[in-house]
Amino acid sequence: MNRHRYSDSEIDAVYRVIRERRDMRHFRPDPIDPDVLRRLLHAAHLAPSVGFMQPWRFIRITDRQLRTQMHAQVDAERRRTASALGEREDEFMRLKVEGILDCGEVLIAALMDGRERHIFGRRTMPEMDLASVACAIQNLWLASRAEGIGMGWVSLFDPQLLGRLLKLPADARPVAILCLGHVDSFYDKPMLEQEGWAERQSLSDMLLENYWSTD
Image 1 (cartoon, helix red, strand yellow):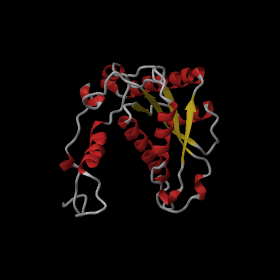
Image 2 (cartoon, rainbow, N blue to C red):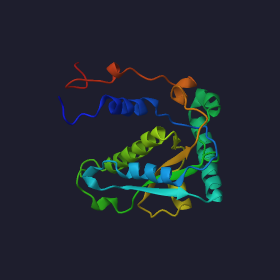
Image 3 (cartoon, rainbow, N blue to C red):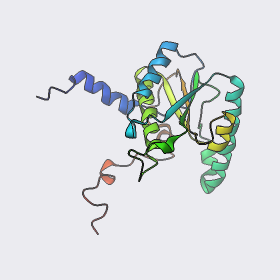
Image 4 (spheres, helix red, strand yellow):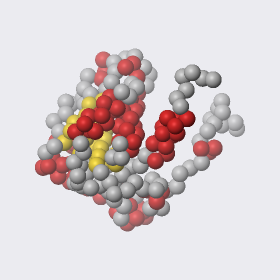
């Protein structure tokens, strides 16, 4: 018996929240309870990070005008992305890709400034700072789902433009616009799968042994 193992019900809950996490786009505007928001942010802050550098910074957007300006930037990039998709342009434009103006809370997840002084774990792979922020975002996502709060990760923006809007230091970088809020329901499947944009690939096609190719 593994004495470090959680109980069956606790393990079921962990796998359930992983299975039912969704990238949400449809929100109600009701505010999130401050204690719940604090718990969610604390969960994000407990994420692992390379060299324990903890490179994440979260900016809570409470200014409605800022939200509107951010939405305009996202919408502009949405149109540029649609144009770049060629024959799928119209299909893409029918998708709802964000809920910035609808949700209860908007957070910016950003990479901190001064990251270059952190060498541990980054000497050959400097992008591990970004991987660490992604871990914090995933923690926030799973905790949100467990609390019954929807979360959507928006990446349709120009990091330099958004950074200037939010007055980030020159060597800091926004990674994600995170929309959090109450929802009427969670999608049965990931929204892009539900809408026929893509299908989940088989794990067997992505699991290799020893070498990438046996050729």
